[in-house]
Length: 155
Image 1: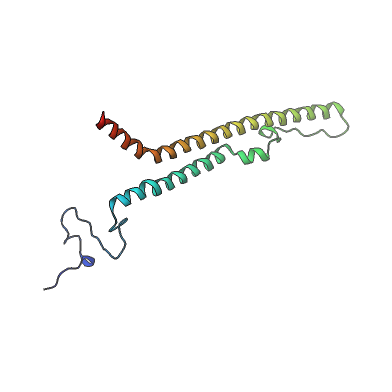
Image 2 (image 1 turned 135 degrees about the horizontal axis):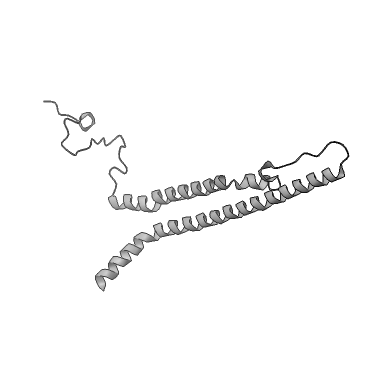
């Protein structure tokens, strides 16, 4: 009589709620490892790595959202490209009007871009502080839970 090996088992041969497992295929996280080792690995290696990746993504997104590098490159450009062309011929009054208007447009652009850069940097700082708090809380949380349980049972 032929017996079905674990490698050739089909869903019909498995009982309800059973998952096919292939010991030599490496399917499943930590097959054959201690559950405490797996929990510690997940708690102190896998999740912190994901927190750091997410934190980095938030920081990069904020830089793109506020366009801080582009705002620095175009700091003294006209605001909303409101620039005026100089008149033809020799018209001192026209030159002064256009020069003054362009100067005001550039100053307004520099002021607005500086405000946006400052807001972006403040948002970056808040993301750094928030990410640091989340990261440290994640690392301390198991110890705080154990301490809370210990205090609850001893009080």
